[in-house]
Length: 134
Image 1: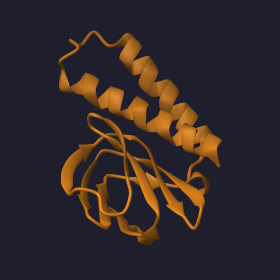
Image 2 (image 1 turned 180 degrees about the horizontal axis):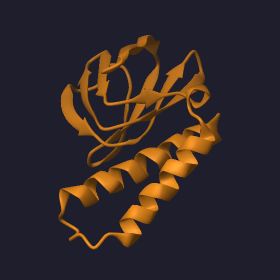
Image 3 (image 1 turned 120 degrees about the vertical axis):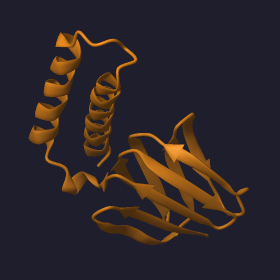
Image 4 (image 1 turned 180 degrees about the vertical axis):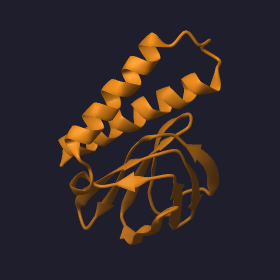
């Protein structure tokens, strides 16, 4: 069993036990089971899942730092929402606005503003995916 803690700037999102954690790491998605080798990584926006008593719970997470120990996972995320906390219409509007900003942008691809727009798009897509998994 893993002790899992998910925290955002707005407070504790989850603090309890899980059999498995999957999270979107900076280099790709990864899974954690009991007795995993310890590591620290930067996470990207995407879908994190916890297997709790045989049932998966999904979270749309923003950028994060993730610490894994032999029997623990700590996710410090800019945001973490379950499907019932997400407003589909607002997210769809946010996604459309971000995609429009990117399409109309005359910025260079290495401009930090482009990175932020891509982040907004990824976060909106993750939120819609979590709604679809519910």
